[in-house]
Length: 149
Image (cartoon, rainbow, N blue to C red; front, top):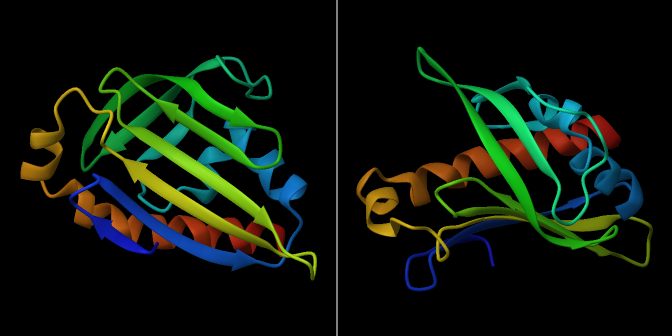
């Protein structure tokens, strides 16, 4: 699915990236690389350990929204090596990456902003984040592709 699904509270975009899943997954699990592929312009730099992410890993990130800097803590809540990773912060909405290897060696990557698990989904909807994140996700996948292709 590509688009905003208000009923299921998910915004997703898929893109085929000309790289194998393990190469892409290595970037996703390296918090020092997150600012390099972030398409929202909010991710600045990690504030915690740069260990490779696995299920249950926690990591901090320096962020910036407009002119306001802040820090946020995240936890990896879904994980399957070279296939799936998702993290969430205190608001409980998730950023999920699903990787599907294709026969030609490329990978179909789906990024999802999933606010179905959010503690305040109505607030995210009122601020327009589900639709706003559509463009952010498209830019993220574009930047991710540029790093590995």
